[in-house]
Length: 419
Ligand SMILES: [Zn+2]
Ligand SMILES: [Zn+2]
Image 1 (cartoon, helix red, strand yellow):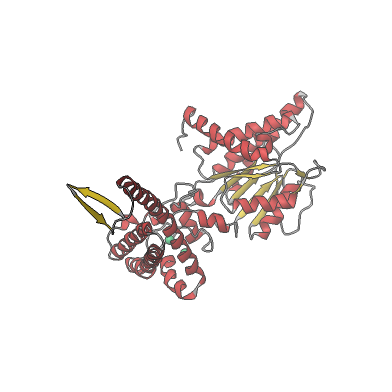
Image 2 (tube, rainbow, N blue to C red):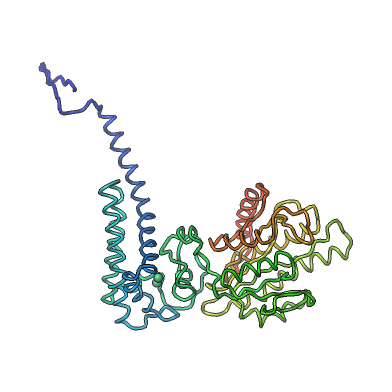
């Protein structure tokens, strides 16, 4: 209760709480700020609803029937098969999808936070777009299905054409995300290895062999690339032999490879003779660079930017001691060159930052090669571009700092290629 004195009379207002005007303003301000935050969050939530609806559309028959119209509407370069099919795809897939987005957000807004109405409004925008496109209007708003060759590499956090193209034509059971890629990262569907031709160098080594096994387990078609013709591989496995300095000879074979994993390397340990220096640079740096260039030159197809990938095992030696100076020097050079090349790479390049694992060369390694291979693949399926697998906690801290700082430095002080 508040007492208000006006002239000589005293009124008692019983319906007003004991809040002072300043407190009232604070409450209003706080409500506006909190609900604005919910409004922003609602965009992320409504996109999650869209992704969940999309996943359900691939799993639940009634929705599958509607969603099939969407998958039937486009040719491989995203041009519509026909105006009629495109219109039906909008009406039977996009309209119910946006209604589901609006419905869920309206319910959440009513029962929980009013700021979530913004998500409902966002869904209404999708509904309007879908109805307009079904009539042949506003076709340019269909951003992720814009026709033409794929020039960008798949988006890391946000879905772009290359990312969504993979859902249509690479693997319909992956790449479900509509705008943010969180759910795919969570589910391990941000990269599918199924039916991918994946070539691995250093294939006769402990990790190379473990990678070949893990890739096959993921449904990929592995190819072993080795400098040891005498090495034993399973009968059915395709094996290519090469020698450092002869990388260009592999180019024809690399044209048919979707993912090249450059995993070979030598460790001369404490040797610092001129021969050891030359050999370390030749195997760990120059041959890697030449192989990278040979592979990147094959990313010249209309869909190569989306489907091709290069993974390079630069090792933890990029940011930490390996107690082998020439191993560190040569691996750091390779790592730095990859950071430079990534500025305008025509396809995704991943670094494998691995700690010591048990192998013929390192019998006291803590991690086992099959476990490391499994971890690499599990992380790659979350579309992580710098795959760190080590027991050294400092690497998880030092590597991202080094990579980010160096990447910015290279961006500022080097020029884009004339690709
Ligand atoms: Zn689509
Ligand atoms: Zn789909």
